[in-house]
Image (cartoon, rainbow, N blue to C red; front, side, top):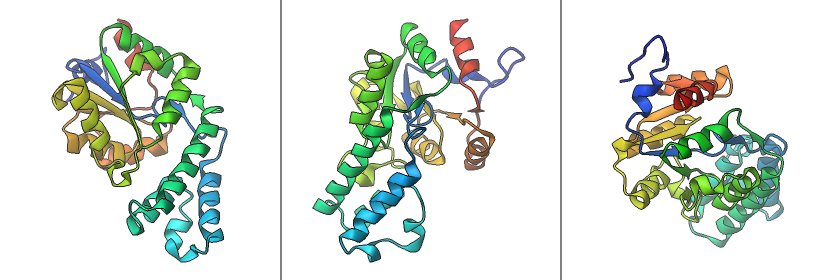
Length: 237
C-alpha cells in the first residue's frame, strides 16, 4: 500500500524507499522501440515468411491478425518448442528489433531518471522480452550502458520464459543478490505487472497515454504514471 501526501500525490516516496535495485522493462519505460519502424509491419512480415514456407496453417486467424510480433513468435514456439524454425523466427525478429533501435524514441525523462537513480546509489537492471542485443545497442547510443551493465536480462531461446513468466526478473534478483521486496519494477503492460507479482516485486506502472494507463489499472496496478517527471523530481529532491 502506498502512502500519498500533498507533496507526493502518487505515493512514490513510499514505493521507492526500499528499492535497492530497479528493474526496468525496455520498450515503453526506456524508449519507444518501434516509433520509427512499425511493429505491425514486422509482425506482418513474420507471418508472410511463415506462409512462404508453406506454414500458413501454423497460426490461428487471431494470431495471424494480431499485428504483434511477440504473439507470432510465442504461437510458433508453442507448437514447435525448441525447433530450428523457432530459432530462425526469433533471429528474424531480433534483426528487426536491431533496425528499430536506430530510430527508437527515448521516453521523456527516462535518460535523466536512469542517470539520477544510478547516481544516488540504486542498482539498475533491464528485464525485457526484447533481445538483450537490442537493449545494449540502444543504451550504447544514449550513453547509458554503464548505468545497467552487466544486468541486462532479455529474451532467450527458451521462449516459454517470456513475461508474464517472472524468469527474467528472477535472474536479475539472483544475480544482484537482492530480495524481491527490496526491488522495484517499472513496466508498461499487464504482463509486466503479472511478472512482478509472481516474482514478489513491487510494481510501478508507466503509461504513455490514457489507453495504456487504463489497461494497467484494470489489471490491478496501484500506481500508474503517465509521465516519469514526478519520479525524477522526487529523486532530485
